[in-house]
Amino acid sequence: MSNFTLLAIIFGYFLVLMFVSKITSRKTKASSFFDGDHQSPWFLVAFGMIGSGISAVSLVSIPGNVGNENLYYFQFILGTIVGYLFIAYILIPIFFKQKLVSIYTYLQNRFGEVTYLTGASFFMVSQSFGAALRLLLSVKILQSAFFDKMNIPPAITILILLLMIWLYTNKSGIKTIVWTDALQSLFLILVIVISIYSIVKALDTGEKSVLNAIIADPKFKFFDFDWNSGTNFFKQFISGFLITIALVGLDQSMMQKTLTVSNATDAKRNVLTFSFFIAAAQTLFLFLGVLLYMFASQKGLQLPMENGKYTQPDELFPTLTMNYFGSIGVIAFFIGVVASTFASIDSCIAALTTSLSYDFFDFEKKSEEAKRKLKNMVLIAVNMAMYLIVLAFLNSEGSIINSIFKVAGYTYGPLLGIYLIGLFTEIKFQEKWLPYMSILAPILTLGLNYWLEKQGFSLGFLNILINAVFTMILLWIIKK
Image (cartoon, rainbow, N blue to C red; front, side):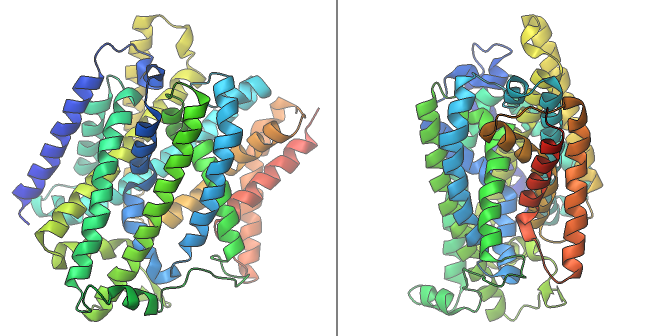
């Protein structure tokens, strides 16, 4: 595949997004960037959220991680389904009843200004690092496949991607993103189907017997009941449930699209429909992972390992695609990476801009002209921060999806604990102590995790539960 062809794919794809942006940007106000004028069709939002939920991390890390953890991620997927039910029937009615744009305004209504700003701050830290890690993986893939051959350094690649996202979202934000993400979700689904077809075609087992080969593969294991393992069923299921609540229900970037729907009933339909789509897509990624390792084994490829673990699982899918699956496979994978990158990062940038504008700069109290200036300044600042964070993690190794969930366990834990206290108790606390308790909880979680690992016990992704529990205990201590 020539550099010119890959460049043409990126440019052509970007032109399509700009065309959609031009159409959706007509007759917009400054607030349209944040709320989409509350006119988004729920089914379009649900379909578009597939792209945001998948990202290049799912496209590459979920299949790659099969080599080290079999299909145990399916246990996590089961937990996410219950998490989406919680979001649909508990959170959505509250958010719509209070007519929220920033979901962290709930904390102000329930507790006060300090809690509100603390919750928004934890979101911004969590979202910045999560989005940066997702963007980092996309950059690494595009570098190895394309930009390294043109002697373009990673710093320029990051800048190009962020600039492209800014160009098609800067005017109408979430109003455009709802439509562009739906388009990108369509491309992602096609990529999954084409990728699986390309691998099946490249295998020597024959298309009819490939399913039997998958089932017979040693990695075809869904459940792990070893209590000391980080992939234990109960740890994964509970983590899936809680991380979904935190990373979707308490995440401005995911909920912002849902809140652009006109009413709570349609918003519930959006969340439940999206949960089905995303669970199905992630399960397909697991089967794709089995196929990839089957293919590597059949070709006798020596994959880098250390202490019985694959050290570069995220590189498996891109490497095999670029060298073995033909032009169609390369084009499909390349479009998938670009689509998933844009779909996940544009929402994150819009959410961070929303949180900063509403939660810290009193956006609603300003004039129309002041609103536009503030939105533009905050948007540029968010892009600059994203750029610097990605540069800082540029040389990191290992499975990025594991890194994202580990970081989320420490950064979203206090936010989850505060919301649970607010939703299920009547207590109020002495707010002046809240920021300190919210920092102390992750520190205690880190210490406990370190001690347990010394005993041979891994919490896995369950850090978020321990962190939330510590937060609730500390808040109980400082209650009024």
